[in-house]
Length: 112
Image 1: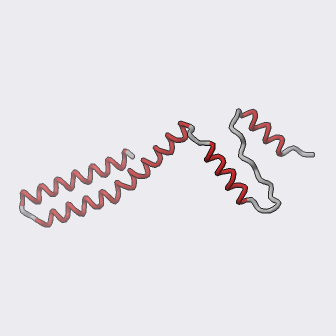
Image 2: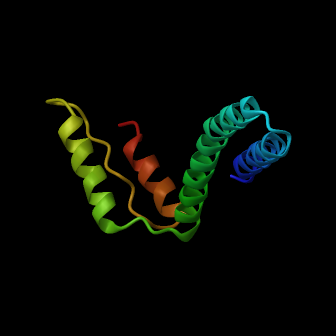
Image 3: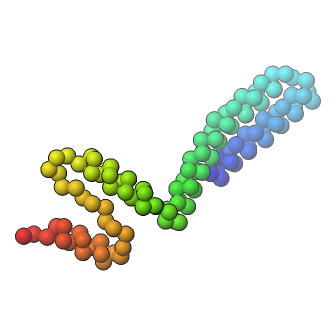
């Protein structure tokens, strides 16, 4: 996200400087070059800012542990719907300790 903001800022500052030179020197072609520079800066910087913002949001959601029971139930329903007839449906492991999950996994793969 910071890289996108830096790219956006640098391109816009250069565009403003070119525009000021265009006004003071009386060359209207430089104003067009400044607009092109601003458009390129937006095309490069805005996607970087958006991707950075999405990653920060995802990281904060993962760190806060805000996965609700509704989302877990929706995942379980999708898993049941996508399983074919006769296919073994792997249930989502319940939230618990590592020991509980390991025991469940061992019970699932036990040989008769």
